[in-house]
Image (tube, rainbow, N blue to C red; front, side, top):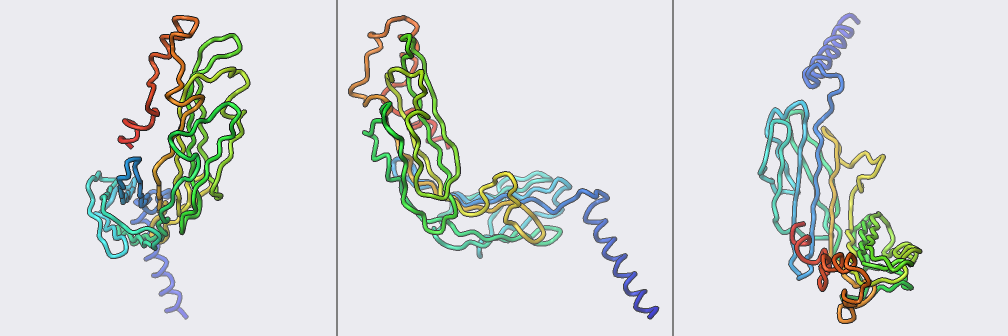
Length: 285
């Protein structure tokens, strides 16, 4: 009986010493945090970019270089500090397949799994010639992405208008939300407030991501398990849809018809002819 209690005491002491070493005298210490994703993005010109990103953080300091393995592929770090190692490459990977992530570090191994969502496309608005006028309901639809759990949609409209006193101004509408359906319907009054009397010109875009894994909303605990915590996601982004607001480019009104020099100056500062997020900003993302 005495030997039993002695063995139990030694076990408790061993666990306590290991816990003390792992915590470094800090009772708030937790295992390393891991943020990782697979990302496929199709640009407007049809070019497809692949991105595999993995970050390992430990505010107590990483005592060894973490070993990151995706399925059977070991990823090489490209940037590091004493508290953070970052892994990234643009290697091609297949969609609608299961990917297993394993991160081995000084205190053990963390792991997670995701399904990379399949390719899909936005079906509405129908194309670059589409014009959203003040009486139109903005409808965005897309085909289902195989393996996805949710969709993130970003709608954007920017237009110049005249109010009831014929004063020029500009307005931006943005909707950023997560849905599980394959459509979003926005009534006209949300895009065109009541004080908008006449839309002069503008443009808009619709962007949709298919996602797998926790969407990182309040209350999410992540999907990394084992000796670590954090998030591992798969994202698939098809090409955006662009459209006109108010009038197509061929029918844009001449700034010279405006009543004041201020309105003329304001309109001339606007870029006309190409949607605002169609060129430079898109290429930088």
